[in-house]
Image 1 (cartoon, one colour):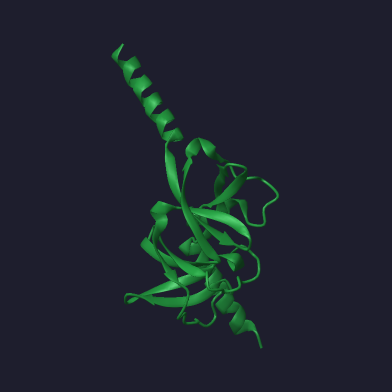
Image 2 (spheres, rainbow, N blue to C red; image 1 turned 90 degrees about the horizontal axis):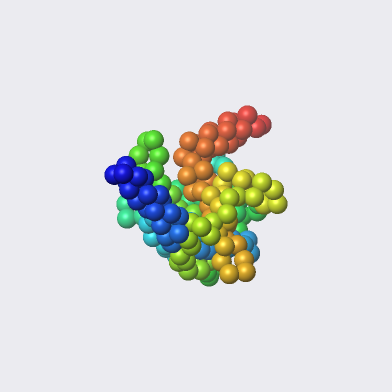
Length: 180
């Protein structure tokens, strides 16, 4: 009887967690609304003072000095395979903190504009579509339902995988050396 009670309480806790809202920072990128879990967000800063780094992939805009630390800045529009985003007055850099095997990594991403922080219940998040998106499906954590529309919730660990970015950077450097 006691084991049955424990099982029921675990099931109830799992069910409650599925309906508990999670917070996401929403932002615009190329006319679409994207979201990143708020726990990955370190801060939001105004766009400016990037230092270009030679032989980097096109989607790496450069690096910034963030209180003495060198932080790489990724252009998400370009990372998704599109053109680099146009910089406007509303453009900003969202500083993210990611966990990797090598430890915590701080990376900035350029976005067109930051919208708001939303709460989306886990029950309102659909799996990524297998077709019809302009970005790789492994970059998408899910599709968050908001009233009449969807928000694309990014899987930042896949989008900004430090191993992936390092491989792409090395490939770009090798390509530059091979060019006449």
